[in-house]
Length: 85
Image (cartoon, rainbow, N blue to C red):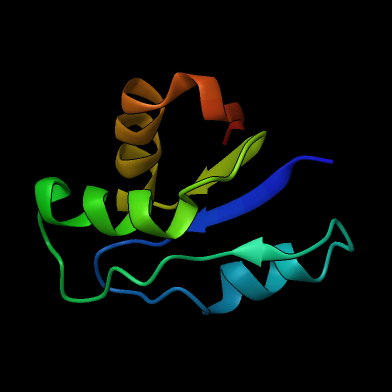
């Protein structure tokens, strides 16, 4: 089963309403790396990479700045990603 990953925006956190909506779908655990107070993609990407190290078949859900981070992760690690929303 794919692993859901929620990537939050600049002014939100990893466990807000959108995270809880995803977690409530019954699709398994939702990973949500904490990138609060990290406003640049270059600062966020290593945090996301560390949180997802060793994970496969990821489905990345990014909102809104998290969408950019999902794309950056896919470019850097396409072999780990099954989908992106």
